Length: 407
Image (cartoon, rainbow, N blue to C red):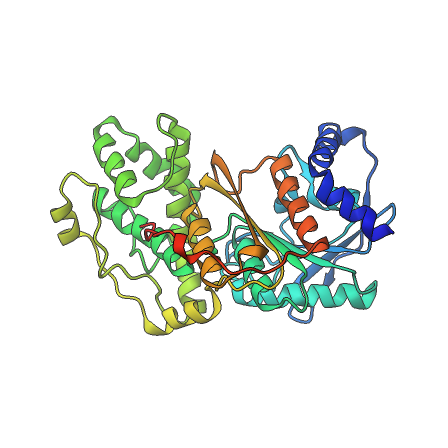
């Protein structure tokens, strides 16, 4: 009987639930704590984990959260700032208020942590089962890098996870994500030569250590100088970096984020992949005032085969789903472009996994910039699909879209 009631709640009245949850979010200060977090523990890998249990009735299900990218030079700890939804709503509190247990992990390493992140999430699920009880369902949610970790875990470890919500992650093509940041850096160096120290594939440590101040004092004034308007416009056109026309803050954010990942993530990625993964030898750039000159003079780099092999083996999704996966993405994501959602959908079609995939897009600028109601709506979709498993069916390949590379 309890299962029937839960099915009705999730599949018949999800909109009513969202309205109720929104009303809860509107008055967070008036609500008593809905969960209690136990002292943080440590996994054998060295990763930290946290478990929070509802103060009321536990519905028997567990939600595990996969956090997004944390710079390699930050301490290994659970990123508290990533446990907050818009408006300051606590993610563990919200999950507990719905009757679910909540768990998360720091991962065993920062920086590029995709491959080991999947293993850490499985370990957290095992710890919960050993210290509490085996959940009826284990759901996985993740954002940004955690979105990719979630998608990979749902594809690979369906024996552990009953479904997942992957938000704003580079799930379509991880190699193209690497090239997106690399392309932006070589294009920046072309239009603003001599400004960035070092090389796009080898970042000097002083620049890493002083990056935020360097951007604020040197790069921001330069790109927004009236004499450089044409160069900035060409950089944005050729790189396809998303922004909102006429809104300077979005241009600033797009430039800052693309260069920040190049500065803070490049050396770490090279070390962990065993080689340099960026390759633009065959790239044809277009959209400048003189594309012939651009393509003749822009810096060119060749990726190391070992790095590309590692990416293909451990960082690329397949679209092969046997349990539900809900994906959520903004259409003007400046860090992880929206074309990832489109490319992943193509993979799902190719693998006859449409029944298990529910994509959602939000027409907005910003990385992982979702309203609380949008995140909740996607989570409720996931719960409904897990409680009422979809029936597989053959994908209509006749309508397979022709995708651009996103470059």
